[in-house]
Every structure is written in C-alpha cells, then in structure tokens.
Image 1 (cartoon, rainbow, N blue to C red):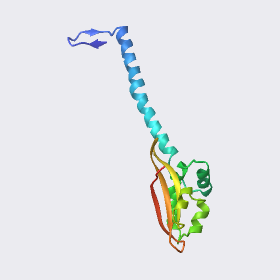
Image 2: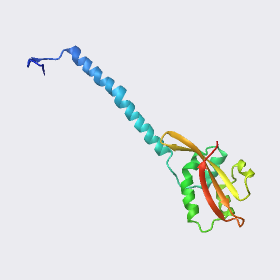
Image 3: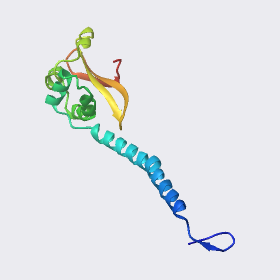
Image 4: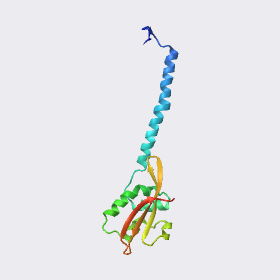
Length: 151
C-alpha cells in the first residue's frame, strides 16, 4: 500500500512493481558490480605485484626468461640486504646477481647494471626501472642507484 499526496491508500500495480524490480536490477548491474569488479582488480593487482624477498636463483632466471618485472619486486629487499652487509665488494655482488645487462659493458668496469623491469601499482604499469651498482678502484661498493630505465 502506498499513500499519495491526498492521503489516499492505493496498491502498486504489477507493472509498477515490475519496473521497480528492473530498476533495482539495472542499478546492481551497472553501478554496484562494476565498482566491485574494479576494486577486486586493483586488490589482485597489488597482491600480484607486491614486494618479495630477494632470491638469487629467481633473479638470474628472471633475466634469462625476460620476466624482469620480478626483479623490480625484489629490488627493495636486495638493497636493504646490501646496505646491511659490511663493505660489499664487486665479487660479493656479482655472484648472486649474475651477469649484468649487456648494455652495461659500455660502462666503466666498476659498474654493474641490471634491468628491473616494470613497476606496478595495482594493475597499472607505472614505469620501467634499472639498478646500477657503482664500485671504486678497490672494488668496494660506492653507490646503489635505482632509476627509471630507458626501455
């Protein structure tokens, strides 16, 4: 029963009830479901591209298999581990990281450079990144640089 502006009670017709049901259904389909889908997509994206601990074998395999996005997920953990090490040198870092990217052959011999791949923020690719490890003449680590890549 519904009360109109004059205070008279009346029942909604079957047609009115049908259109109300259709209106609710369309609201769910075109408003609620897309919002839920988008939120789920973003959450899954963040989970899939979260930071992971450094693993030398995965790092090397990612470079060979061109799955270099996994390196980006490891790089912050790698950097923290390097910074906790007392006086890391060229040999200490070259062994777990494997061969550097071929373009780093053009650089000074005191530099190791690796492609990290794409960074992800949720489902969105934001940029590609590289890491450069610079060493002094005594082969001691001087600087760790993570910067946007050119590829």
